[in-house]
Length: 195
Figure 1 (cartoon, rainbow, N blue to C red):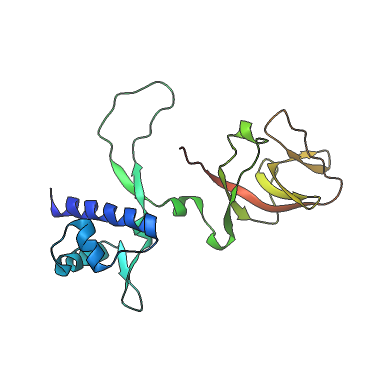
Figure 2: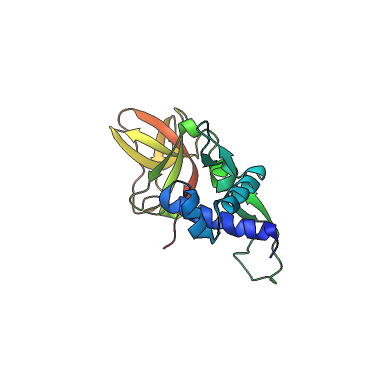
């Protein structure tokens, strides 16, 4: 295994540790975690990861993950959801999910989905709706709207001159606001964890 491949392996161990603890381990813990015999070996690894743009030093001279630390492998070969195709060696690029889903971090939040009124749009209970806060939306956008002081996730539609909220499940009626309809934000992504 090359030094680069070993560093990728060590990076994976550090990423797993960070996912569990939300911080990087101490030098002593890294020695145990990575199987190093000295703090010098840990220091050399951290410096190599810094040169690759995966770690940086804080103002207090502590180690901290950079955005690249959180990148995941993005396959250059899509997987067909139709007929199978021959498996090939899959090339890959780095990919940061946050960069893909979030254009405006200060205006973006994750909201858990409850209920099945949008199931035919592929939005299931327990999903996390990635919402960009905006006061307006276009017809056809899936929005979080405030109707009669309650939030709802629906598709913005129009009937005549009035806006309505269209569910994506025939078991639910179209919401025709009697009072004010306020757009809280627009769905820009969806996160689903399979257990």
